Length: 224
Image: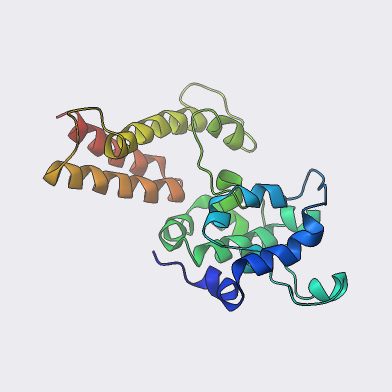
């Protein structure tokens, strides 16, 4: 989807001007644990690559003189904001301005419902980082989900999710980096792309049953 809402502020000023104004101070600050991210995290992120800058998410006045004036209207500030369900819900809604398809899935998830009720739950930053935009993999999914889901009995949620993540990776790799002579074309490629689209929606809904059906369809096409 075309980036819209989250780029409005960035379009009002040259993106690098906005970053330079903030980094005059923030590039030197060593932030403590509990903060969502640092300037260094942003600098290496996909958001930096696409000129989604500090003011896009945090607002503030990059042309102001002095700390107080520059921070007027700043949002998502401090350790309290990083852990507050209301602030994290606001972050989710901000992310949805660009990531509409993902939000359509997430908003029907049990995590979004819990967050909306004021309880702690997984949000965009839990899985993707505050600014980095990374995705979970086989090494990180267990540690991430175990923050809340502690069941370790056979067939538990995390175990199932990890298996499904591996199947998701297999299908996506077949599309993007196929083995020599195994390129997907025509109707077969369309079916696999449909399966991945359905799987991505199910991931953000945290609906493992729907996810399993989508992945079964995708792997079935690949194995034909």
